[in-house]
Length: 436
Ligand SMILES: Nc1ncnc2c1ncn2[C@@H]1O[C@H](COP(=O)(O)OP(=O)(O)OP(=O)(O)O)[C@@H](O)[C@H]1O
Image (cartoon, rainbow, N blue to C red; front, side, top):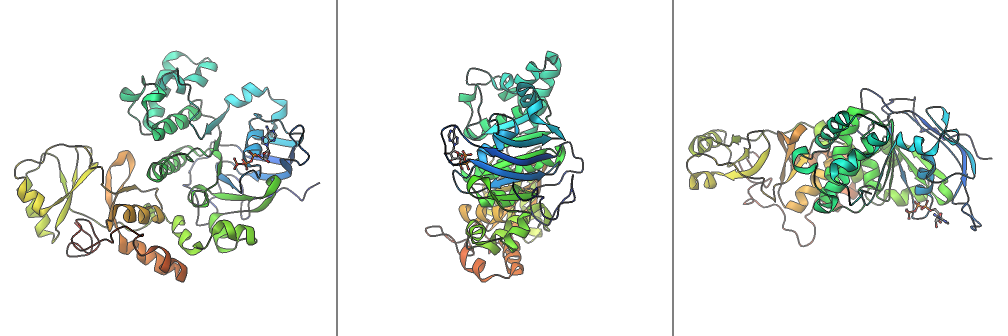
């Protein structure tokens, strides 16, 4: 038999907010706790167990992330929770109930499940995909329709535009958003997410992580999340379970604690050389003082905006649309060149924007990839909140006080121009360090 059940270190149970690290906290917990008791899985014909004698307590309303090397048993462990895989030994309790006593189909309808490729049915529209489980649960069609709209809105897709599309008509990131919406459809207390963002490009991935944290803040589900990416685990997890072969739990704790005190060399290996820098992933953009920029709204007179920008001692301002969403940076030169009313337009592709749920690490990445020393910060419904400067991130790094971060990331990556004084949004532009 194994040692006693792994409690997440420092946990006091449901809704416990843990340390400084990890995910968005919900004021209200809708999730239920999950208990793994001496769980073992032996696949037929395999000598070694895929999962051996694992015991673990997953508190209600928290995001617990499984990280570990390929083949260590993360997915097998997760799939035993919704009985896509049946354990060969031990017990799994969901809200105190033994899952093996439940009808497996019924159990799965009460557990949201998101996989890497979205797992959408290609022959069903987005709306039909999301409405699938409510349909199986025999909801009235009007209720399902309402729910589909609500969920599309929640995951940031306009219902009128996307409800009737087919999965092939969506980008990878949009498909994953629909996958998340579908998993949430019947409001299950538990979500299982198996590398849901693994196939996405870094920027889309970051946005979906932010969305997940925002949704979790509202919903307070119990979420088990599998990833290979330790940075993702630090960003999303209230707790991280670092697993080794056969899902042996090497360390189960808050991200902050794991970064500060890795249990052994294997965890150190995961944490990697930039441990201190990774602590930037513990700090959210929404948690630091944002800087102000001059803003202009569509329909305003360019010369009035220019005057306002000049009198603020700035050289740039941010144009917002009618819903206060940022669309582009405007320089004084642009404003002088385009007199008259500011016309409506779509957001500039290259505009560096992060949400308040993004980490300082995300903000730094965005600055480095866009070569701009400032990023625009948006909150709910993408509305403008302020800007964050490279100096703010640098100050945070200094406060972390580590040599290894100073060397690793403050320089622009090879081949990338460093933010320069002429860059419209570089840290050096303008009179006060913030471009605008
Ligand atoms: N259906 C199966 N039959 C036999 N062995 C299996 C089966 N599924 C998984 N395994 C084995 O069980 C072990 C654990 O696999 P699992 O997929 O759970 O690991 P993982 O940590 O999720 O891996 P990865 O990170 O690569 O997805 C591996 O050695 C794998 O080869």
